[in-house]
Image (cartoon, rainbow, N blue to C red; front, side, top):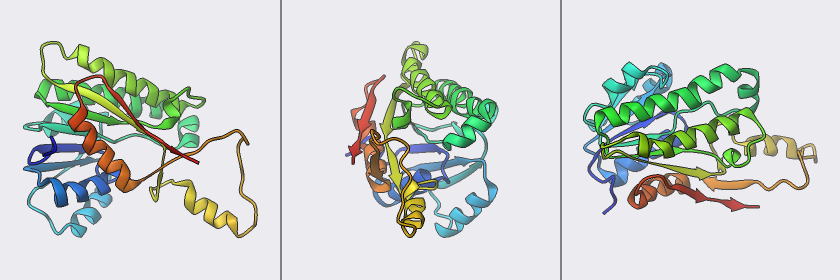
Length: 231
């Protein structure tokens, strides 16, 4: 049986593409005692809650990972955390660098502190292939986030909270995926290639969710799990 089965789980960024897929998978396969959906968009939460018919296992928290007090309240009684909240658009991060750092780096620090203080058992943070030898602020901010999560195992001191990171590539079908853009541009007969030496890594939403769930089972503390399918 997987570690997450029957537990009290919280997911940050719970109404994003990954968050929605994870929540559906958890309700169908993990039978969580409680599943806290933590996100900052009121309309997305309303729409998603309506789709799920107010499942009694769900708890809906409006909040931002920049707000440490709200995180602390949401973590009460939580046993496992999936940290998926982030600013993810490369160009948006370049144009709004301070906001990117406040969410991806300082927000992750808040998550780490809240998990330790609440005695959460295991925490997995979602990363990206762009955090490997980053060339842009988004990738650099996620590399910082990854390092903070790994360091959280030492920072936790005598606490039993353990942190790990999963890193994968472009998620097919997610918000911001390049696939819809490529489909539109295919009609013109030309696809823009940033660099002919480029390798693009792919993963489906379903694969990403199962990878995260499996990583909780493997987690000892400080691991960076990789799942990369390239073309």
